[in-house]
Amino acid sequence: PYDAWPLQRGFDRFYGILEAFTNLHQPHRLIEDNRVVTTDRYPDGYFLTDDLTDRAISMIRERQASRPHQPFFLCFAHPAAHATLLAKVDDIERYRDTYTVGWDEIRRRRPARQIELGIIAAGTVLSARESNDLDGVKAWDDLTDTERLVFARYMAVYAAMVDEIDQSLGRLRDALEETGDWENTIVVYLSDNGASREGEATGTTNYFTHLAGSPDTVTLDAQRLDLIGSPQTMSHYPRGWAMAGNTPFRLFKRHTHAGGVQVPCILSWPAGLVDQGGAIRTQYAHCIDILPTVLELAGLSAPTELRGNELLGMDGMSLLDVLRDGDAAAVRREQYYENEGHRGFYRDGWEVVSNREPRTPFGDHEWELYDLRSDPSETIDLAADEPERVADLSLGWHDAAVANNVYPLDEGSGWRWLVRPPGDEVFQEPVTIWPGTPTLERIRCGALIWQRSFTVTIDVTFAGADEGVLVAHGDQGGGYSVEIRDGRAVFVHNDGGGTTAVVEMGSVAVGRQQVVLDVQAPGGTVWAVSLLVGGERGGGPFTCPMLWPMAPFSGIDVGIDRASPVDWARYETHGAFPYSGILHAVRYEPGELAPDSPGRFVDFLRDWGAKFE
Image (cartoon, rainbow, N blue to C red):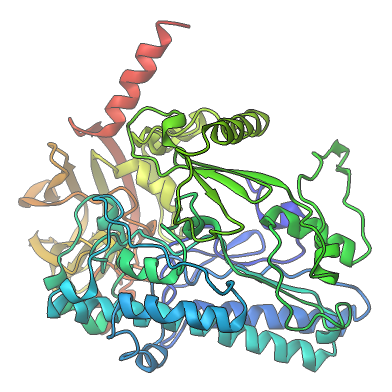
């Protein structure tokens, strides 16, 4: 089951997360080497960026002490500044007033500084703001006072996250200098994509409910202002800040315009690139060129086989000539792009690119054409003037797409998110979980409850004064739990958007008995929740928002509520609140999908497609 985990891919050590979106204050699932790290409660002041940095430094020092002459490769992939946006209080405070001037003013100021630093050429035109309904950004001056207050806070948190990455890099450099490795260490520092639009027009204090199409309101976010960036919110800034972050380019992450794909890349090697310190290169390059470049710098050849299996050749090209000579010709002449149906193709300074509207026909009519040599910010569309060039570059994209298995394209319906491997069907079968089991993995847990009815049968002995969590699923981004408090069964539901409901569901009798959580999904993305205690209906039905598509983001705990809690108020007084009595087992039994569950359409498409097999 671990054949794609880091150690199986050649690393000697690993520490971190294997997916994004985690709570940096209270990570949902840390991995060390090939095992899950079980943490009941993170210490006060814990922050993942610091923890990862500590571990990286420890690995460097361990290698230096035990094998000082052996070269090392360290891949440090920060979860920051990916969604969700979280940072430490002191770092946020430093930027509290920095962004109150708004995204338009920040965007106006940045080109001059970029030109001064040599990042963009003098004369580069600042692209106009997007004005269509899908991508448009309001002028800062047109926002309400409340919107400006909340939106500035979002950006302060993002800036603090980036600051914390800088602090991390500084600590790593200090450690390498301490061990004597800095001068002869190649460091490549880059981002994975342009600034993200995922917070859309107004941002959010709960990313997961936002994805489900239930964005929180700015009024609610204002009430939680000082919590933005804390472990109690899963935040993301509005796309206006992404527009500013991508200055001077157009559009955002997910797009194939420059705002989505053009990112900074810094390469340092004091001992090997002696005369190039501080130099800037403008030749076109792609991230796949980094590996062959580092291999050539290190005097190594790429392996051709692994464990007896022949490896595919590399598509990347070494950038060594460009690194050593700023006037050298670009080694990469063409490159294709595709993401979520957006397409792009670069060749010798020219580019065709599309800003696709979902669920509309594909075709050459989507292409825009830019001469990036004179117009790097994509402000003058030449497609109507040069149809032959558009056709030629469009064919280039198609040929590259065929060669690299890009088809079929994402037409924008969203069905691809519902498709799961056949092996995942086992996750929809009933499962029994015993006390002491580590937190069950979230995708496995989600299949039990997402967009469906389900029951949870809890086999428990109550001695009269026992209390604690019987079962918990989720965290501050959304979740639910069944607990015993003051002799009564309690159902807790956190909608992830700032509302936690604590519903008493009846007294618990002394002795061994079953507590049954019955959750019905009648449609309309709601649940109707009832609780049976010792065979007697304790309460309900209680109607609450259904949790999906990414919430609950933490898995199921039995007899405890680990890491990020479902109920913050209870966490502050009782922590992880382990059950003090005897808990025998918890059994989940998934029921019928909701009438309007997207999963029903997958079944329909499967049955329909089978007719043509």
